[in-house]
Structures are given as C-alpha cells and as structure tokens.
Amino acid sequence: MLNEKWQTLLDVADFAFQPIVNIYTGKLYAVEALIRNYEGAGFVTIDAIFDTAYSEKILYTLDVKLREKAIHKFSLLPFSKHIKLFYNLDNRITMMPDFKPGYTCELLNSYSMDTSNICFELSEKHQVGMYAGVDKLVLNLYKQQGYKMAIDDFGVGFSGLQMLFNADPNFIKIDRFFCQRYSFKVKKSVFLSAPLFKLHR
Image (cartoon, rainbow, N blue to C red; front, side, top):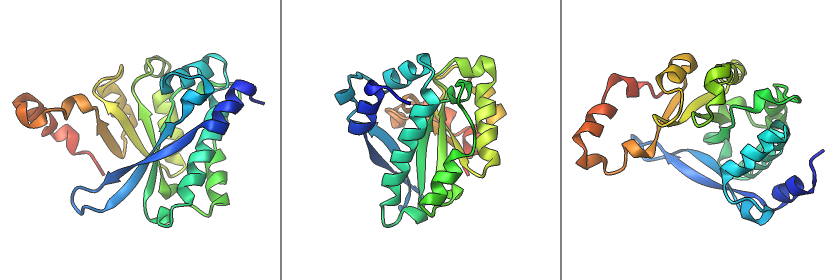
C-alpha cells in the first residue's frame, strides 16, 4: 500500500508520448512514454521520484502503477496496436522485496495487447546495475517474455560496452552528446559510423 505522497503522485502525474519515427519510411514507429506533472506531488526531477522510491523500497510497486497508467493511455490511441510503446525501466526494480515477473503480460492481456507492442528502455545511469549484474538480469527476464529491449542514453553511463555486450539489445539509443552539432564534428561522425552502431534491429 502506497502512502499519501505516492498516491498524490499517481493522481497528478500524466504521460506525454514522444514520437519515434522510422527514418527510412518517415512513418511513426513508436512513442516513448515520458512522465509529466510530477511537480504537483512535490518532486523536482524525474530522477528524484525513482531515487526516493528506491530508498523507500517501493520502487517496483510504484513502477507497476505508473506502467499501468502509461499502457492504459497508450491503448486509447486508435493506432496503438500498429506501433510500439517505449517505456523506461529502472534497472533497480529487481532489487525490491516485492518484485515478481509477469505482471506486464497480465496487464497487456487486459487491454487486448501483445508483448510485441512494448519495448523496455534500460538506462546506464544507475551504477548499481553494473556491479550487481542487475542490467543483465532485467534484460534477460524481459527478453524471455518476448519484449523488445533498448539501451537508453548509451555512451554516458557506467557500464558502456560491457552492458552492450551482456545485453544484446534490439535498439541502442545513443546519448544526445554524440548527436548535438553532429554535422560539425568529424570525430563524432566517424564514431557513429562504426560497425558497433549498425546493430539496430
């Protein structure tokens, strides 16, 4: 049971959908769920939400509630079954005492949706994942259930190539640092044209 602070967050928070376009066809491929309106619950940043939930050991419980809210809103899109929902997954959820796999499958069934509609994004930002093997555990759990997986903010986190090697992700979302002023940086152009970044599928 979540206390009043967390219930307030769930009441006021909403999700905005950022489009992901296929650069080859120009068509909408997916949308990324971005949490919004969290300031009304007293949180200054998104990281503050999940760091606080982690410290209070309710991260998985909170994520399940937010995940349900995002999937529900996604299901209301008239074309939702023809695109994917990219959802950011905190790699620390498996460290929570109440964690159990399989909930998302049940949730999708209730909305007549399939695992193929969801892609979970795993960020490198939490150092705990690298040392505890959490990243690999989370990726394996979700990939075995048929979900697509993506590494978010690639290139600026703690695990870098080690995470990529262990994860075998379906998508790599390169951090904006490598794309900003891209056309003016020969070094960035050479870096992003390397075979490593042709793994997208």
